[in-house]
Image 1 (cartoon, helix red, strand yellow):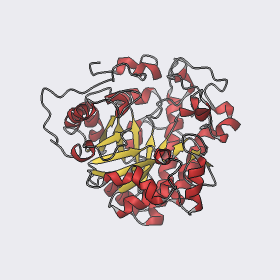
Image 2: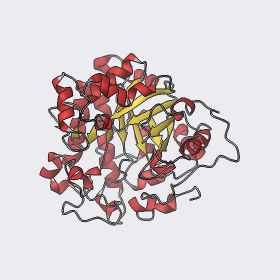
Image 3: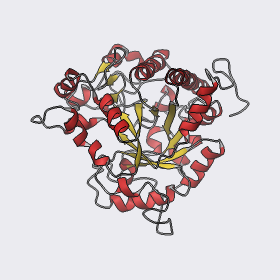
Image 4: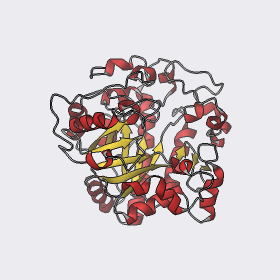
Length: 409
């Protein structure tokens, strides 16, 4: 926090103009009742007999948002360097998860998933953020379709992977294909991807998703400590991303912001190399989203800590935690559980972030976005730390990680 400095990261916030400072501040403080994260698998829902048209794309998820309390959409277009949006920096995603034929049909119409998402949000008065999963490792799977998710960039840079031989490190929840952010090549490619998206697409900002999946530096995977030097490397990346965002603000003449989704504990985040206190202090980020697979602290504590640092904060309600870890839409107790936890989160947060809920015609998209709705928090409301039998616990990603847990299991 204040007082800490080093040679590689500026010790004070630099804006390109007063416009950048004022517009990012104002944009960050807009009302956002619900931020909905769409993982970008809209095309998967299109059957082979359905033409890949904008109308069919919207019918899958976006049209269900009509009448909802969703004020902003975070749209994810793929895994590292392998995306459904068009680019000359990254690769076009071709896998069984997102059938390449459907993708190229859209491209043949002169559009793509991210462009369509932006258009829908603009027409319906919603903000749109591009969500970048900072270390998504769905390509660690053994099936052919999961292996096809791995980008050419990863295959050509095996030295940047934690375990290129496919072995499973003890503290990676089985995710051997994760990137080691200790390599400059990784950080440099992340920056190029971000810069390219902001130059091509009229998004309102970036959501840097550090919870999908929460591991970044080699020592963490093998039970060793993440050092200050690792944090400084990540800080340098955040400073550079913020510079790129400032340049986008100046070009557009309006606010463009950076949201980060991190574990809901400043200390746990710091232990995996995410120094969010310093990110806030230097102004490299504009809003914080806390929570994901696991929930570490009472919302009042985590959100209070972030607010004391002068930053808007959102509580992430993740279906991977609140419902079945593998079939989030199938759990029939889901809506009541979401409602109870939302009531608790609204006592402390500026809004709710919905993750891994995609049936947009469901009631929670119309009831969770208001303090006190569907009802005030009372003794029947309990914050849930972990889903029963979940595959993802704090200790699976970080040695001693369960010691950060302050909520009953």
